[in-house]
Length: 144
Length: 407
Ligand SMILES: Cc1ncc(COP(=O)(O)O)c(C=O)c1O
Image 1 (cartoon, helix red, strand yellow):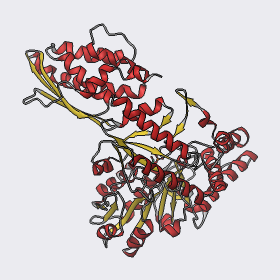
Image 2 (cartoon, rainbow over the protein chains, first blue to last red; image 1 turned 60 degrees about the vertical axis):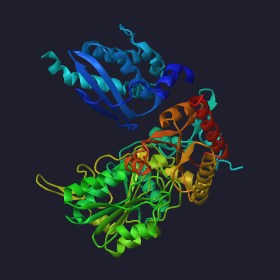
Image 3 (cartoon, rainbow over the protein chains, first blue to last red; image 1 turned 180 degrees about the horizontal axis):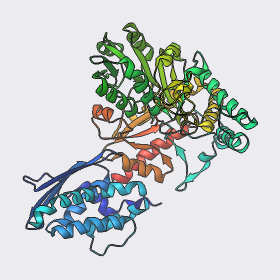
Image 4 (cartoon, helix red, strand yellow; image 1 turned 90 degrees about the vertical axis):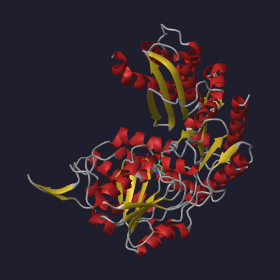
């Protein structure tokens, strides 16, 4: 096992300087999730407008994998239609279990190495689970 | 140079494994200990030669199995200096044992307005059964205040134990802080008010000579798997008068005396609490683990645990950017620490790449994490197969982790 395969530069960079790490002022949706096995926490704020994710922020604490994954995710979904954001979360989770993603994952590609560390998959998916939860809840409004 | 207390290569073949190109260094014994050859072979022999259900049949194998099972109870009772073997109830482990006391004893002895005293350093298994008991009965939980280094002082005990206290439930050794708690003193206080002392011995029974009556324990819970025994077997010790008055919570075969369509009467202690086919091979394995530990000597084991715990404390404390928790001494068994700016999971991952197994997380002690003001910690824990070399490896792994994340 090579540590550098897991901790790619991009991951360390997102961990050290996370993007969109802030509370939104008036979020349309806020979801908090806890990883009960390790105590990691995330709060995800989303601003949704006309079916788009117009702004996104996260706060919380966790390991470098969970924080970098959250940071990368926020970059990937900002400005995207809700369906695309939701699809990204799902494709990313499948990607971690070895299914190639049909959509661009951007910096999230750097988390590929996580698939070889089963105990860390839940770290990498925490933010994505929060996103799914938020968007599933928001679907009724958005269809109106 | 502090050497392991045993011939590691011979007694613990698992520790000859290489992980990611390095010698496996097992610093996770507080989660579960490794098992010596003698335990593995004893269990293997039981299944190969004597397997049968106990206390039921008259054939030869049933006799052998019953004798082996009964011997394990006798050994366990002697190991903790219980008055008689019947005071040892076999369970799945500490968690089941503590749940059994909280239900079987707590539901009868605790009423609305009574108090149950705990400490913030308890493992969830010594908190949640009492929370649930308090909810069922209307009792109140009270927490001992910890001193700055995480120890429990006599003064702090005096402030919370009083006439309303029915139960004091404390760990003897903390699985995070490595503190050795003043159980005898707490027991004397609660006994004065007519309450009982419940001791979580999950970490202490593996690491010190235990004499239940000198300790003042009315109940003592521990797990086989943390003391060189197999998983799935544990013990609840209880004073005979208390066990006789206590209600069973698991109903079925083997725990009854007479049954008709509407009612049943209970078997004697301990069968009353051991409904169903017990973990026979587990008990036999625990007996072998006790033989192994007794062969090394519990006083030697205790001194070794403290020596390594205290050495590791000093060693880690001297590394800049590393926080260590708990007292400098006495410090037994487990040492929790954090590296500035590196999450414990990432610490454990780098350690694994070096063949070093530690635990990262909240260690089933979230209230203690709140008290420490951290979300989680890394934890190294030591046992009789560790030596000073392993403390050096621990230090090197910390330095390597710092280099890796602070480049
Ligand atoms: C202090 C303490 N109490 C209770 C337990 C629970 O033990 P078990 O999981 O074997 O039931 C543990 C171990 O995890 C422990 O360290």
